[in-house]
Amino acid sequence: MERIAITDKAATVVRKLKEQHGDLIFHQSGGCCDGSCPMIFEKEDMYLDESDVLLGQLEGVNFYMNRDQFEYWKHTFLTIDITEGRGSSFSLEIPMGIRFIVHSRMLTEEENKVLNP
Amino acid sequence: MSYTKPKFKTQYGNFINGKFIDPVGGAYFENRSPVDNSLIAKYPRSQKEDVELALDAANAAKEAWGNTSAAERAALLNKVADIIEANLEEFAVVETCDNGKPIRETLNADVPLAVDHWRYFASCIRAEEGTATELDANTLSMNIREPLGVVGQIIPWNFPLLMLSWKLPPALATGNCVILKPAEQTPSSATLLMEKIAEVFPPGVVNVVHGFGPEAGKPLASSPRVDKVAFTGETTTGQLIMQYASKNLNPVTMELGGKSPNIFFNSVMDADDAFLDKAIEGAVLFAFNQGEVCTCPSRILVQEDIYDKFMARVIERTKAIVQDNPYDVNTMVGAQASNDQYEKIKSYINIGKEEGAKVLCGGDVRKLDGDFANGFYIQPTILEGHNKMRVFQEEIFGPVVCVTKFKDEAEALEIANDTLYGLGAGVWTRDAHQLYQIPRAIKAGRVWVNCYHAYPAHAPFGGYKKSGFGRETHLMMMDHYRQTKNMLISYDKNKLGFF
Image 1 (tube, each protein chain N blue to C red):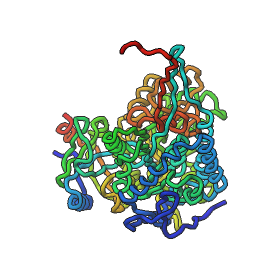
Image 2 (image 1 turned 60 degrees about the horizontal axis):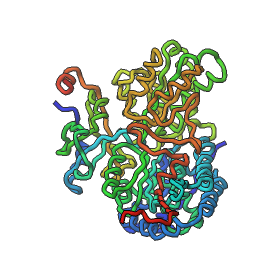
Image 3 (image 1 turned 90 degrees about the vertical axis):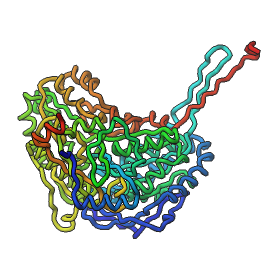
Image 4 (image 1 turned 180 degrees about the vertical axis):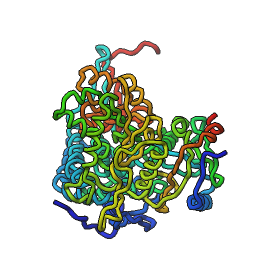
């Protein structure tokens, strides 16, 4: 059972970025300005450790979130999408004039039992 | 009275070494106005090579600039303030065009405040003194503050000129050279400022490089040729910048946003007077700047026994907000800064509804007429729910507030502090004890007491917890841009006697 998914349009962008940059990771941001957006980086660009939670894999790209933030997000199912617009962060899709955004819904009771036992 | 979209050139350059130059790679990006999605101008899509040019200029200038007198630097900062003030309307219209915020705000808040921050730091650097301590009859410890050298600053798009004016003056006042990267959504006012002040500072002291985060921001933040990075933005980029700084063992300051509680105790409704009127406005300030403020009071907590009556007044006041043409001085709420913000906010309103939050007002986009139909407008929205909902926990950065009730002081504090962030908070009460004790118990860097959204120079601003560290808009920021040189001087003619 998964807690994340990706739209076809967003998956196409991820594949394109993988061709350009090699191995990638997603990291979900929090806070000000462009916060609350998923960001994509070259795999070795971000230092990850036990304070990051792996939510799943999209197009072969691991999706992480900080553990503190995950505590507030763990009851939601996330769908990564792409939208037109000018974001400002170090995320690799920004120069393409598009950016990843996250849609979400509450997990069903059944999903919750499995994913957050 | 209404203004119109200002005139721009077709394209602009980076400001490096005292002049405007084209990006090395010759690439530009289109900057559009969120007011009506029309083209403003093209700005450089800079790469590492452009950042390196700015680093060359800043490093070449730092020795001489660092040795100028405080009087000289203060005079130049004051000159910048005078120039902004003399062109206040022009800056205000450009800012409204680029960011989407209403002109009444840029005319009365953004630009006048920017002026004052320049003047404040010009004054600070003249008024302060170093310290000297006589450790014993023959030993003097003298502290001289020295500039770090070259500073990288990355600023956000919600208050483009004001954030620039929070960051540049303390760095320049203390004798540093700066490379500033404005947000790619809002490059216009920084460019206008460089046009106006091109001759003020020696070449290389102030440099502005435009472009995208991964292409221009990252090379700046990770360069071993900067001595410090200051950043305002979100947590993931903050973490990355700290990582890069750790490789260079460089200091950083971070302002990373929040989810600020605005707490209303029952005594606010003890009388229907001017203070209650102020408190109601204080709750509605969530819609100020379209909610695009790091300290947006995005969680309203109301004591349960006044909840219904108080919220009825807040809803009434929110519904009376004028959201229209941002260039019209009567407009109170304008456009969101960009399409992706607009999409994100829409998505959060849906999340709130799905989570079971009740929409008390707003809850949808606003379609304006004519040219503005293409702009990014969202109705001021009040959602009622509980603090564990995602809309209560995540910074939506839109005109969306979440409201809940509390029983007593203990519960108010529990809800207020139940967040990853700690940037701002508001406390409203007529109770003298609460006025002191509640703010002390809130884990946030700025607690507004019986007011909100005031950002004067001379009051330190910065975060607790995941909202970052460092204190801006105050003389203590100057020490974030300096080293301390301790000279330990002996006036004793006699040897130690060890050897």
